[in-house]
Length: 380
Image (cartoon, rainbow, N blue to C red; front, side, top):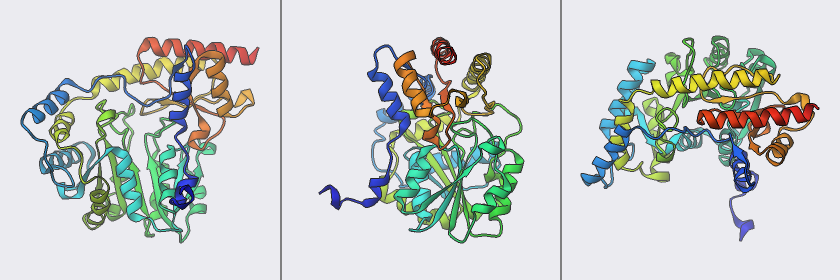
């Protein structure tokens, strides 16, 4: 019966991040710097809130889009901290940012539509677009220092372009799109019926004062689909809660996708998410900032070229000098050095690997020691 299944599944790739993490686990003595998983525990106040919710018997069906009190808290947080003007009725609580992205893209795409994805990019975008029977179109940002070039973007826009996906800070580079990049996208969409999906899940983990989300272009409100997550800033990856914000007429259609996909996010987590929003992520962000400085210093001392990340917890060093594909480099590093990283090819950009620094200091030191020895062997 396999041949009778949805044909869109046959071109869908498994996550290379998970595959290389699995390979590391299967290799005795190997350690991994692959997953974007905060090493912190979820804050105590958040865990206490879910415990109280369970004790109060809050285990029944809730509104499809999430508790009104949580959506109101999100709306106020976004207004105060990010300058957004979404109301509680323009917010959908989703099963992580993954479902928010799926809901957004499934809700706007028709077969034959095209979605422009600046690369390197998280593999999720490409695979969701293909599952929707649309076509991913990649914009190579590497020649422009991982920023968006207006001319290169303009060459890709056509009558089939339905959306552009922006992830800033970016996974895997950690780079933040500058004003020129955002203006290039603005010029491309302002006179066209093109949606912009703003994947801002790392917005709370920014190390520069000069950060702006494309969602701040409020004159394009009806074209914006803004995705957020509780996973990264609040160390809640396993909770699987995120949210999607969109202009009311668009949101009213998107909520149908959400309703028939997951019904609603778990009831006991709603109060816990309110507690998360009210918590301070500064200590975690400052820890990542210190780890970033350490990792960059070590990589540069090894002679590896690496763009400085302004957000998230990833670095994307170049391994082009070694004359092999990023997948080959990573496989050899697992076998010969006992260290796993993620190939740049997973993100659509060869000649790089992604290392994650949301690990404890001693783990980072040992991992980078292994990388240094491996690089030394390749250069010998």
